[in-house]
Length: 394
Image (tube, rainbow, N blue to C red; front, side, top):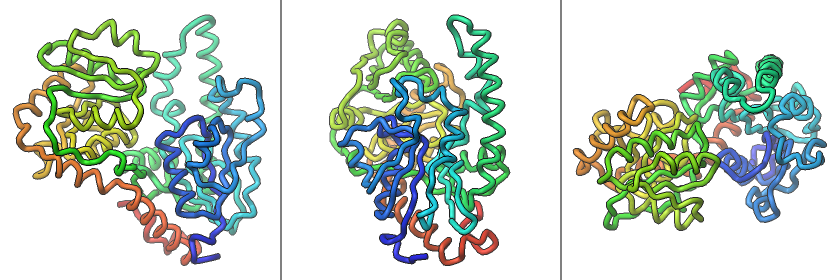
């Protein structure tokens, strides 16, 4: 094994590459730390410009990627994907590093080939949210579709648990996910928070304007409807909603005149809207949640649900001498409204610099340093679990 990480041959395995989202930013950082790499992924729908962002020598795809119009239904091929992730030959690499929200951790490695899996989350639709997922299946033949989904999920769970058995070391993206990993897989893991490119979200110390802001893909689990309902009850408070998605028409129907929908925004425009807002409002139950960190990087306080990843990334009023936001402890419009009231009553206790200081902990440099240290220490100790003190939970 090489101690020089620049020379280390690393196979980076990722579930799929539909767009450049938060998980793909982890892959981008992996490829930056280990430039002598190849990426292996089931599906790749990126254009050339986005591919270059990943800094990889080569992106290998499964045979499923050649199916006609597969970008429209690839998520429905879950059981087929479990077989195809195992067909990748990564034997030429000295280390395998997987970025997994479902499948990548199942890649097959040899007995003397270290496999480190960075788990974004065990697949929630297969575990704690499976009942909700199945109940939301609607349309023609919905009963039959639900019965098929139950069987597919049952089979996937068996593979999912077995796939962690050959992973040498597991990294979790938050303490919340660390608990879920142990609950489901009975494996210990080390927390390394994902990278957030806070440089693009620069600190703003100018005059704040009289509006609140939220940003998200407009899909049900993001709970934007709760934020819209909360602000629609208080007409004197303006809310700006950034984003697009299938929920947009429904949200407009329930929104008051004080709610402004601005749709999808390019990065510079989105940053400007977040920078000038009084606070950023976030109601989703996320495994980590990158946007609240990006808002704090702008110096903007965050009003958020106090469970999941945001409980680790936002310092709440009343529990910190340097608060960066306010928590609400129930996902409903009344609790959101009360949290906004609390924020306004204590607005002088928040500062742009405190928010920025908290966000800087989650930057790219910290992630690169922690991943490098973990891999280097593991190589020096042959990834012997008995010696690898870094595997102890935080």
